Structure formats: structure tokens, C-alpha cells
Amino acid sequence: MADHGPRFLALVDAARARIREVDVAEVKARLDRADRFVLIDTREESEWAAGRIPGAVYLGKGVLERDIEARFPDLHADLVLYCGGGFRSALSADALREMGYSRVASMDGGMRGWRAAGYATES
Image (cartoon, rainbow, N blue to C red; front, side, top):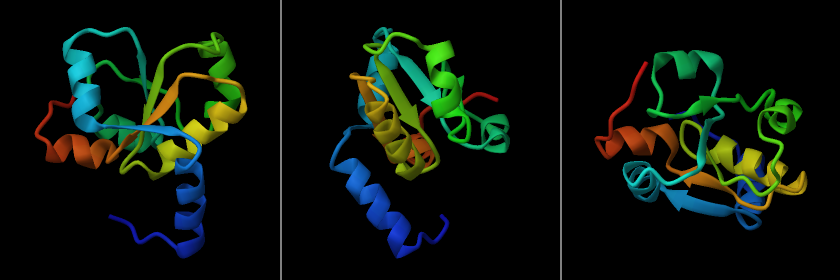
């Protein structure tokens, strides 16, 4: 895991105070039940190519705010974002909240937590 600077961590902590977070077990249970929601991978394209959660769609953090309205125009769409560990997805969820999305969450633990739990991935 990358070392994160204190200002970055403070930014993430501030975002986490404003967003909803879910854990990997909750996301897995929702996928197993075939709940209706959109799972969005916000990692870099190279990370996506190396493996992802089955059923996820790719919308990297670098283009998320620019492209979200065209891909998911419903401000009440149920969106769950994930990244490598839950930091970038927390920042992304906060940005979408600021844009008016009312049902957005970040998956705490991210892809590392997903893999640590032994859940399947696809490439």
C-alpha cells in the first residue's frame, strides 16, 4: 500500500464525514442478491485492466465528474464507488454528492479489501 501524506489523509477524512461508506461484505451481499445498483470502479485504467469486481463499470477518478452525467443522469441512481483502498472513492463520492447525487456511497477497503475477503475478481 502506498504511503499517504497527512494532507491527503485529512482531505479523505473530511470527505468521509460527508459521505456514506459501505464495507466489502455489504457490497458482496448486494451483488449476490442481484440488488439494483451501479458499482463503479474509479481506479486508474491500468488497475482496472489488472482485475476488477465482476459487474463493475469503469469510470476513473480522472474523468468521473466530467462523464458521470452522460453515463448516469439520474441524480437518485444508487451508485457504489470503489478504488484500491477506499480513499479515492471517498473523494469521488464526495464530489458526486456535491454534484447532487443523493444515493452515492464509497466502498471502504476498496479492491484490497475485496481481495482480502477472498471474493472473486475478473479481468
